Length: 266
Ligand code: KIV
Ligand code: NA
Image 1 (tube, rainbow, N blue to C red):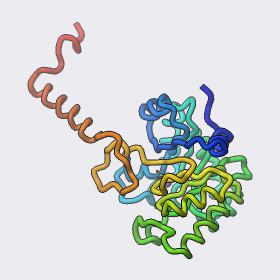
Image 2 (image 1 turned 90 degrees about the horizontal axis):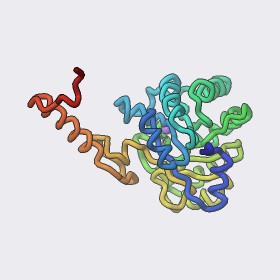
Image 3 (image 1 turned 180 degrees about the vertical axis):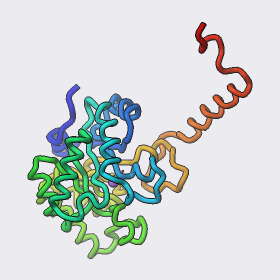
Image 4 (image 1 turned 90 degrees about the vertical axis):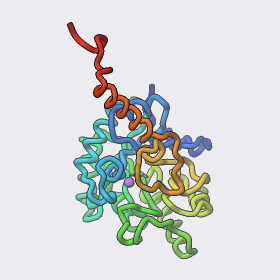
């Protein structure tokens, strides 16, 4: 099987084929997802919340993203692996951003990196792409900006905000990004941005007018206890599935039903 590249992703936009993206953080799950034919796997800094139990994505480190990327990369002969740049790994200055992007490729084994920001990050995106590291942008509701936004709120509802988001999208494309994530913005605006850009848009909470869609794996599997936002669709009741298996194991060990002869050595 051939590995998906940024050329394939661009071709999918040009041909009107929806691009499928999900987050993933570990080897066995990535094996399954790659086998299902997912186009892109994002090792998102959402792992800080859904895997590590943090309140938000801010505590995630480059080393953590590298660790999870390596696990995912070993399981993905087909899917393209994109590694998220965590908070403070690219905002301080451009040399730091270049070094950390390089580490995600060299040590993490990712094929591209993703970072949050628009016009304000154009120079950083340009500096990383000039090292031949493909960059995916991420604008709109950017979770690393939680303290500025005052919570996870839909962005671009007001006209002035919407104009700024359009400018951000164009700046990200002009800086050389190969794709851009549009998160938490009105569907009409997402469609307008998608039509204005040459590069593909990947939506999350941005409606059906994007070139592709991304969701957090734990959300679609129903693994998260906490409130899940309106834009998530649950495709499985993962919590019930795991609880049933664990409860059955506990009950069988307690009753002596497990292990049997079949599970024992002589
Ligand atoms: O970290 C993440 O999972 C993301 C996606 C939700 C786009 O950035
Ligand atoms: Na992220």
